[in-house]
Image 1 (cartoon, rainbow, N blue to C red):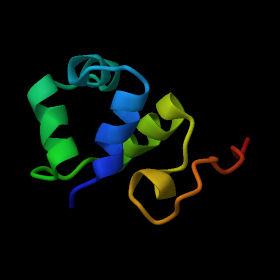
Image 2: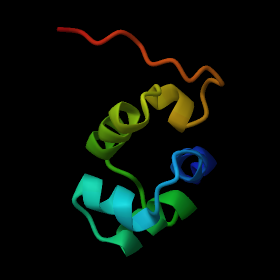
Image 3: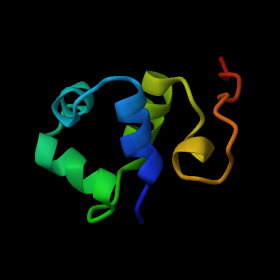
Image 4: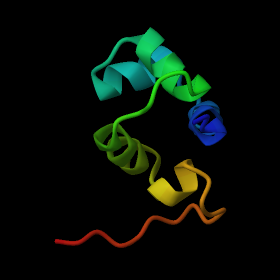
Length: 74
């Protein structure tokens, strides 16, 4: 599945693929494949990216156009 918003969020936040990959602890090429949809992104990476960009996972995967994340459960 191709998540265009992964690339859009990265660009909007002035980050390179290498910077995001380093934050996730993976190689840049692996992250590039997540953006292009040639490799499935693990849920734990989606969770981390939602915190990193302060958006909901639903927004990242295109279920909603609302960026606001849900309140965190403590």
